[in-house]
Length: 102
Image (tube, rainbow, N blue to C red; front, side, top):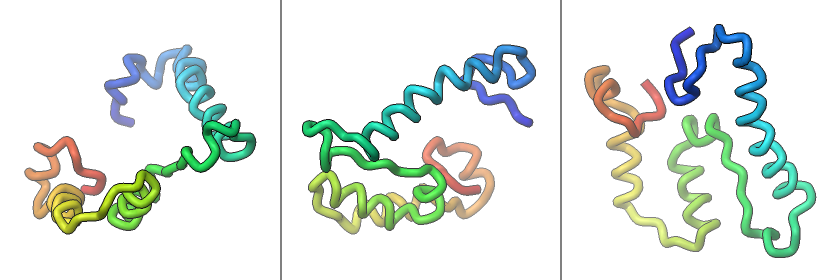
């Protein structure tokens, strides 16, 4: 398993599980609140996006997000997603920080 650099802790560390739990618990609580028991101020202002869905159906999910936020869709967004989502070769994948698939 490769290191996850932003975690600042190794998966081999004995505290890894509790560290990840501390990161994930608030996210899970926010999702539950937003989906199951949204307060009035949050109703219809909360959207959950799964990374897996975004990686597999990038344009579809991006369109949903634009619609949700009230933004107009542009063909330039399609072009940007095409240019950054699936690289033509591995050297492009290694240089870009915006790629979701290799």
